[in-house]
Length: 109
Image 1 (cartoon, rainbow, N blue to C red):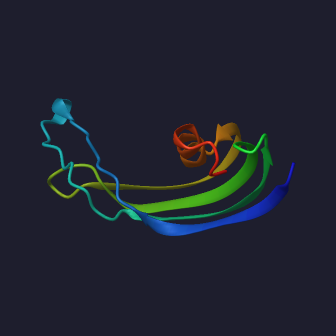
Image 2: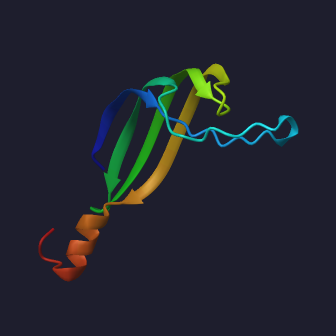
């Protein structure tokens, strides 16, 4: 069962679509996509193969999101928020392309 470790690093823009209708105060909504902030994340994990086509994977990721410009109405109102998150991933999978090709021609792999 060969295993390998991997790392994850990510940085990107967050473009939400605020679909908010405030009928109590008769505001029209602003639900257009726009850059409201950024997100950054780091993580790592381990993946192990078994039975040629199958694998198990475990990973952990920690991230931070900062949204200083979330549009809430058509008249220019906005909100802001920032938060951190933790993500734990555990899965069992199949390498589908190899599996599919081996069904067609089992002598390739």
